[in-house]
Length: 154
Image (cartoon, rainbow, N blue to C red; front, side, top):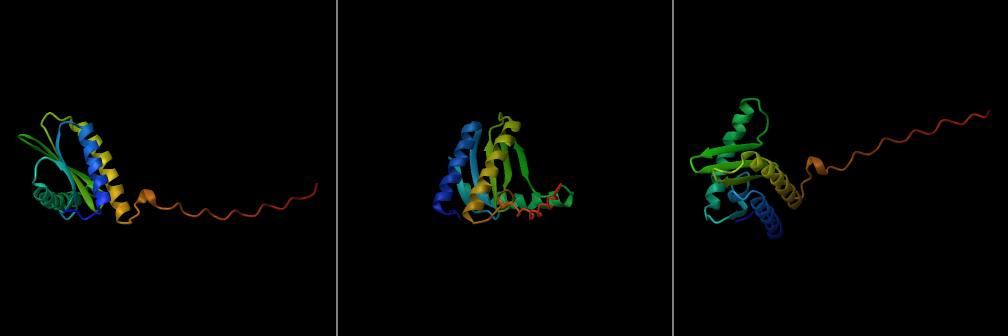
């Protein structure tokens, strides 16, 4: 099921559960690789693999649409259906967070909390894969300190 080690899967699942606690109108939460493999899911529904595969397909279209219209790299996608929402957020370059929510969800709150969780999931995945994101790069070395000017006698 997962392409991450069990301890990373457990941490991602814990993040999904915290997100669902912060946004009670969520009916499902899924972290998947960008190519459609389930990393972790917190949902009563058993169709995680199907949702992950469909998310990968939608991600491809969303990325092309965003690029083609000059809007830059993919960040998020929101679909409003008759019975609720499906929202997908980039979680770094290697993963996505897909959520399902009731129609009564506060969409602003959904975005706020999901963006936080997607950043946390990206950090967990990058750490697991040994990647270093822009926020974790070592600081550049400081320039050498020039020698002090000589002290002239007065």
